[in-house]
Amino acid sequence: MLEPTIGQGLRATGRRMTRTRKAVLALLERTHQPVSASEIFSQLQEADVAIDLVTVYRTVNVLKELGLVVQMDLHQENQSRYELKEGRKHHHHIRCQICGKIVDLLLCPLKKLTKLIEERTQFVVDDHTLEFSGFCPKCQ
Amino acid sequence: MLEPTIGQGLRATGRRMTRTRKAVLALLERTHQPVSASEIFSQLQEADVAIDLVTVYRTVNVLKELGLVVQMDLHQENQSRYELKEGRKHHHHIRCQICGKIVDLLLCPLKKLTKLIEERTQFVVDDHTLEFSGFCPKCQ
DNA sequence: TGTTATTTGCAATAGACTTGCAATAATGCT
DNA sequence: AGCATTATTGCAAGTCTATTGCAAATAACA
Image 1 (spheres, rainbow over the protein chains, first blue to last red):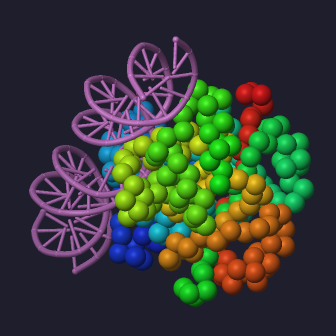
Image 2: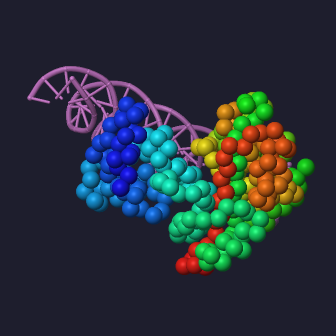
Image 3: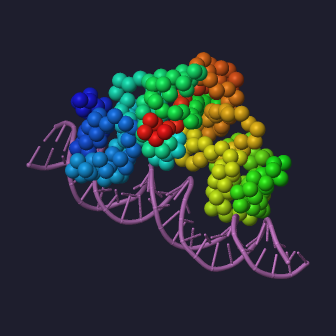
């Protein structure tokens, strides 16, 4: 239950804890895969929570600003996914090219990783993307 | 000049070497940054090459199918970029969060890389994304 | 309970990319 | 060289994800 703490974080930035924000947070809490905005939308609809897709987008953006949610743009997907940060360590994901299944990787250093990942996940690794971002000399 | 060889590759798959494909290839050959479809489009327009944006998309897709071009979806960008594969080694990129500048990284193993990358590129590394893709147990 | 500022929903919009189709152009054959 | 065949192009329209404007709804707080 993150709600009380998060409520404080919201209020501290002049924001409010609302019915829809609770619903999105609750969904993120019980979901164990990174979810997209449209998935959040349809899963809440199934749970009879009245919410607009626009509100989902606005909500995940607020949660991102508060540092509560991580947005990720996985390779070969055309939509962003969101995941609660909570106390979670920095980690990566592996995604099946066929069914789209996403599994967390608990490790990070890359060198001999491919084999290790294959052993632990039972995936066959076909490709990977490594991306850094930061500040170039001119912008520092 | 890749054109003759590529012409063969095209013909081998029942395709044709056309004016627009030559123009896109030539642009990719002389460009040293990964370029987006709209960049290809506008750069060709400036060079007085008549081409439609739709054709640019179709062309890069064909070149991708032939394995001549790599498509990359960089984090925090909402468009794909394309780069000639030519004889180039597998490599990664670093992108400035402010100006969008993209610089090639000639290395890959990750472990102690951050510092090395900072030394060689003069970027300050703020974040990175590592992504694997492949085939999950069910889909193999 | 009432006041006020935030949030929501709806409609419209933006931007990347794709698709249908008729017109155009590259290839291969004579 | 000329012609027939078939791929390719351009244009218009459509898809999909995500954002924005604005009036109506609602949370926070006196």
